[in-house]
Length: 594
Image (tube, rainbow, N blue to C red; front, side):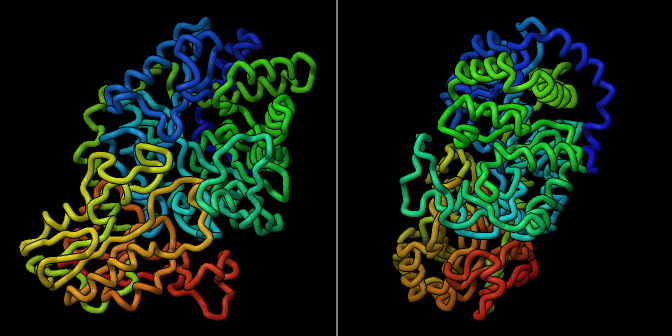
């Protein structure tokens, strides 16, 4: 049995929990099991219904979007909870998956796909610590991260949330992030997600229930694999997808988020075997389970059935996220008629209260306002800059890198001066946002600051005079979740055209690829003298420039096997394909710093 070392040290608070449970009414208990998104409930209503948690989803920002308005918005809910009869504090949660990325001006770190290439637990632990401080500054105690997904098919729109296709790499780096985020010096609760098998679903199995209203029909491949069905045998499933949870629980996981996906046709939110028998029983997980966004509604067309089956399966808190009155009424009825036992309710509430005591929010419910000076600070941006540099993987280098700072440089491509594109999805808005979406440094700005010679820029690659070195920055338009499912993985024709155009105008050509996964790069690989996978480096792209110009070495190693064509997917097909991969797992050329 694996037991959370973090929670074990707080079992002496069980008598406090016993005392609270003895005083709580059914309404107060069910309120604790309820999580609502902030636009669907007022602070006064949160107090009236004894709500246990409020969240901001992707793009759930105040207007104007500043650190100060974030603090005021969050504090409104936190203070309201303290007016209730028992003064049980609520927890405010956000998707700070690469920094407090909803908030304008926060430090945006590289997405996990890049961090996996660093193989550096220390820098990832620092990212967790910095993220915790920026969250606590505005009163947020709960971060829906890290993803411990182990993506086995790069067509998945959430592949960039996974550190690697390799379970060992994912486990080591996710534990480092969890430890940083939950550092007692400035503690934020991690939500280890998505349990279980979100990275192991099968292409074409994401069947949207007729009764679920959702924008599943956008780009042609939207929701082709995200929220799909995992079909591995149990031994394989455990070896690939359960192992990171075992490591995370041992390292102190207090909360785990349940996944949208199914396992052999049964939605995970209704899967008592995996939620209760395995996670809480076999692994001894003493924390609580949170559902994903409206995910229980995919269990059945009947909402009452959704509530009963998910709670009985082992879900402790429901991310409703909209109609809280309907959820509370359904769960209340289920208890009154015996469809959900009081023992199950008390178990769920005990787990939630245990996490709240562990967080220390009974003593310090409003976060750490004195940390506001750390929000988007130079110290945090320095960590992000280093992480971006360490994330880079050099796929090809025919004598051009590092670039001389005295060279005449031509910079092109739609990603060169586009902070939103280099940050990717889950940045300011759920699906990301192009342009100068937040405070940061673009790759062009980094080059202009680094170069002693002249710099020309044209996003289309049309220059007035020939240059010694061309840097073309191309990549994927931001996306998130099932909206990013993509069966082609080919480069944008506009990007290919720019690379080919610049090739004729420079002596040496460097292509920098901004992407959330390996892409089909055959069209540009032979054209370029150097190709660098910079992934989604975040707001501090001068880290990319540091590596290009030799202020830091390029040492990153692929966390994903690089494919030649999309028909080589999923990964098990790629690994056995007669043509082999374009670049193997762990590949990465190196450069020395000057």
